[in-house]
Image (cartoon, rainbow, N blue to C red):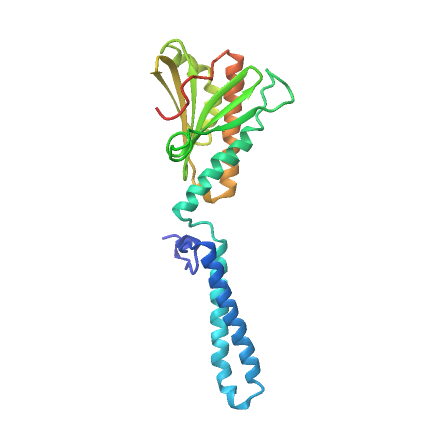
Length: 261
């Protein structure tokens, strides 16, 4: 057993039970009131000699209440252990705000210098549960003048996936695409992405799905530094895909919305 493992862990946010904010603020208010009342009572007992023996007991109550207040305050700001609902909320924020903001910084100098692309998160029809494409992902529409593309990003707590669809004429183009994008996805491999090229025909349209998956060392949704790293990395990888595709006249826009096959 390592020295780190032998160290006692008196209070770890991973072991904290998640409570809604109203409950935590309510408990904090009660404990703060109890601690304040106990302190005032202890001070007032100094002026009544017959109650001085009770001061120690009252101060113990104040100390316990103050300690409980500190613990609840820790719980209030603890984010390492989140409820399933909270994780769903953070997933929505990651996909619909953080990824969107990073993608909006992409530039395509071959088309127009000094200008960033336009990006929209594609929504599904009303009545479809979740509102976005597939179980834990979102589709993005990127466009600038005559260029446009759609691609998919999925996050499952610590597993991240990106999927690009390419319009092709035949299955023989799979090897050619792998060669053309070798530098883009070769760089992605250095941070843990594993990329595959898969041919498919959907509703008469011939496409190649380029899907990359990476596993983060830490849960992305509970770690701001991890979130910033991955959203910026997705944007950089997507920018490289776009610029490479434009140079080689590769069609990144398909009638079929990108997503897991």
